Length: 168
Image (cartoon, rainbow, N blue to C red; front, side, top):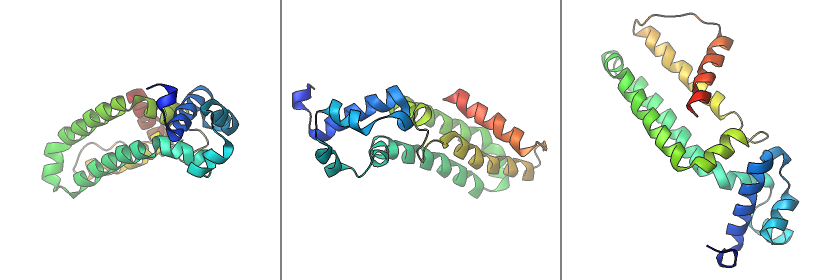
C-alpha cells in the first residue's frame, strides 16, 4: 500500500512503529512521529491523547492475548486434580509454549516492540510478570511430591527470567 492510499491513522501507526523500533519508547519523539506521518499535531490528538496511548494501540491487543493465554494455561493447570497435574504437566506447558512461539512469531514486530522497545511503558516488565506467574507452578509441583529445591527467590527469578529471555 502506498502512502497516498494509507489513512491518517495508518500513517501515524507506521511512523510510530518505526520511531519506537529505532529509538525505543523513552527516546521516541512524538514530534518526529507526527512529522514523519505528515500529519498535524491536532490530527494526532484526534486519535490519541499521548505517546503512551499510541504505543498501547500498537501492542496492547497482542500483549493482552499473549498474557491472557499464558495465565489461562496456569489457571487451568491449577484446577486439575493432583493426579491430572502430575500426568499432564509437560503436555499442557508444552502446548502453551508452542502456541506462544507461533503467536509471537506471527506478531514479531509487536513482540520486538514489547521486548526491546517498551522501557518506560506498562509493558516493560513483561518477562518478569511471566516469572511471577511461573512461581505458582513450582509450588504446585512441590505439593505433588516433586523434588523441592529451595532456591533463593532472587535466584529463582533470575533463572526463570533467563529462560523466558532465551525463549524470546
